[in-house]
Length: 540
Image (tube, rainbow, N blue to C red; front, side, top):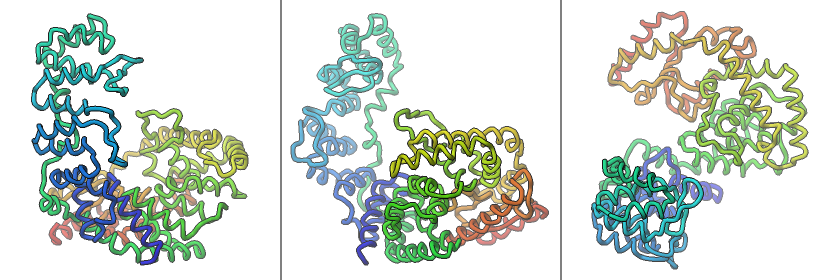
């Protein structure tokens, strides 16, 4: 294995340990051990995975080596060894723990309170809160044990503990600790006496890491032996060979623009379904095909080939757009609009309740490109495009997502798409596709069937009907797949639809998914029965 493959393997092992969407902790451990790469993972990642998989006994000595008293205590807590856990939580600062050096200067009050709650020792819970010296600060916060936190959970806990312990001084203490008026303190205590905060106390008595079922190492590895973890073993085992193939495909695509080569690259980058692993693979590919600070023509097409590529290479994409002598295509502009709508690049004004307004529109890219093409013909586009290029030239190599003209242009496109959707496209109900889905579910009641499935390797496209366990997809081919339809964007959109259909066919072949098509003039019921009979005959 050469140096670049070793570096990628190291990065992917790290990504597997950290990623949260593809594999469960037990699956990660099984995959890394089966691939002979467990020792390649960092020791802190090994022990965190052991803990998250419920192997508390195995985790204790590893955490003890770091002097990470909270995690040792959590493992003992989960094992029901509460007295030992209390001893760990009472330990003070950790001067030898390196990355795990304790942030506190004294006992772990939060865990000691949780331990007291688990035991039903509400007097001890009250004493631990008192020892933390709560002090009200601005608004909804309180300083407790030297750090700021939300006030309400601590008030509920204190009131519940006081009610259970019959504390006579609770009213005055709540006023002092939390800055409450007498009537406010009375209200909290009245609620506590009626057990209004019992659920909060029960949740507190079970810290998240202690809620995982206890498992032996043997049982955990058996549980981790799944189809997904075996796929991870395969990915790790042939990473050097697949990287070499991807590098060759990248060179071929840059010189010939072969769509087949680009599809293979996209599938290699996204096949795991993990964005963390995708980033590792993309970086390895970028190292082999650097741009030396210059925007190159191929970058625009490459970084709009898949939503993750747009997300991971948005800086490169925008830099290439600014350097271009011609305005971007509707497809490129649509990628920019989708990416900005999905994740607005404005860290100074983060809205935790934000939802992407273009979610439904993403499923109809041909129509959306036609809308953007019409928007491009207006005067707004040319002014906004000019402002964006001017800002890009003056910004140099900075991140152009942070410029006001880019935000203005992206939000104008988003508004045009939403307006057009409400005026025309939302009226279409797709009765045939939905009817086909319901009919197939009736024909195959015991088979898992997904409507509008979106495996990440196929993004931004979707499969009309997908049977994941059978690796079978069914596509209803409406009239727009065979001739230009005005509402879908006319001739240009039809050409794009044909290209997308070919891309979908190639990617499904790479993923081992069989495609069945239903022509819009076929007898839908008869075709579905034929497909269902084939699935049943194959043990579906």
